[in-house]
Image 1 (spheres, rainbow, N blue to C red):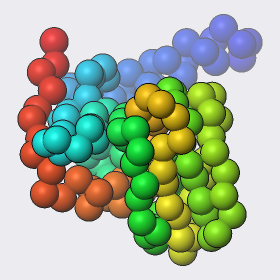
Image 2: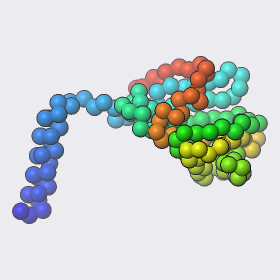
Image 3: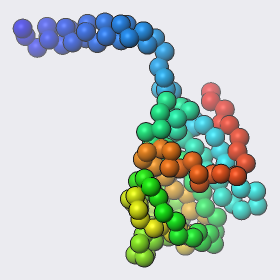
Image 4: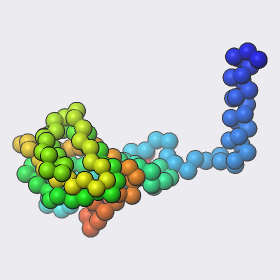
Length: 154
């Protein structure tokens, strides 16, 4: 068999395989604007949930864009999953197990299960961070009790 024949054969198998499973519609959204926006009244905190079980089809990962207000100083807390922060705007304090850092736009902070982490804002403007939780169920308690509204998709 030459390369072209192999590629055509694989393509036919892929099409036959997808038809055989009966999956004409996906169990996740191919494109989305996110699922929900959480806003704590009067606090300046906002979370735009971009990826979660509602549009991913599983709890494998949760991704949110979080905005923390000027002067925010959180308390130390533990995580049972990986948490990754990518700073989009502002200066974001990231203290892990007593090791302090201030993250600038374009920098990443990482927290692993069992770590104690504290976050804060160190700028004259809010800090906005893209936050990823793996697995995704870990991020859900962070928004408990905060009013939310759905994001309208297209």
